[in-house]
Length: 408
Image (cartoon, rainbow, N blue to C red; front, top):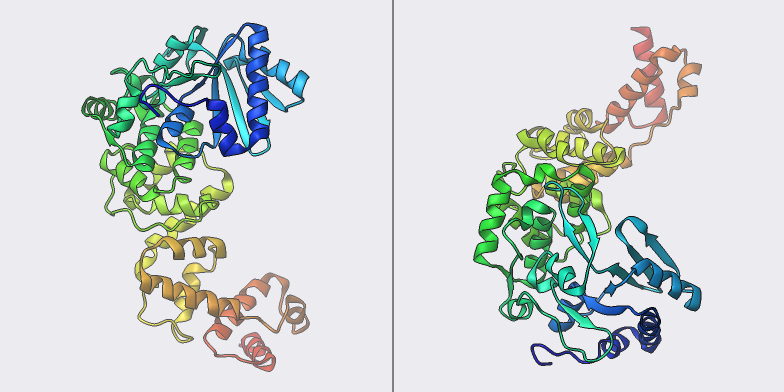
């Protein structure tokens, strides 16, 4: 491939996704010609084709109304579609491939961090609104397949450099900061000098505070799906993107990418505990995740008391009293993210002890022994601690202990 030419993009898509997808893409191109629209593969799709990487979805810019085109395709080919009237965009769903149809537009930002105002335009203006030069590329879907590159994106790809298109890019849309970090980590690209200055200026002006909690949480969730997540977090810390202190270096995360609770706990523990309230105030967490993070920080604060030299039946009760109201899930998450082998070992032993501690006496048994209902919880707790410490072993031992306390 020459720097400004790429082979038939429909053929390339067919090679990656099969001839059926290629045929559908050709039908989309035919439908656009009937409507008098021009179509262009744009953005990250072109970038990944140049880099020789597999594409996960297709972004197509439409010199016309993308929703009209999507409805035509839905009517003629029966392809499921979702329409976004406000943004004049639509998504077509083809098995495991999504095709985003976007009306070519120019954008203006009423205020920093806000969603843009949209005006229909042409492909040249559409590329100028992009975040980085490496994404400001287009290929006509029909021949000739000459790459449209008004901002020098191809040269930046080959020089492995990420560059914004204007000095106010991060101020207009601060979420571009997170995309910059993702691309730098994903492709191992450097940040162009002027872009780095614009980045530092935007962060120093606290542009992150103009992003809604929903959008900021979404951006971090996307970062947690990146392969090189440690590099992403290193960059977030290096540039103090969130404005929080870090007393730790990022740990080897080994994340289960489907487990956002573990990912968020890992990220939280990178920061100083004194910034916990500031941390949680930046994001919008559902009740379950917020509860997990609260428990993880509780465990972090209790760490000195959890690092006893050896957990056994004579030392387990004080640890049990610290951990008994914390969910097993949070303990496991903390165990996997605390980056302290001695602490992990102690938590493993604690879970082993508690998982294997089962009382023989039930609440109904305690009532039969004369325990008042409002004292049931006290006696269950007494029995649990006694069994953990091996003070009682059998059902008769439990009965004797209850009777002893009842007679005192």
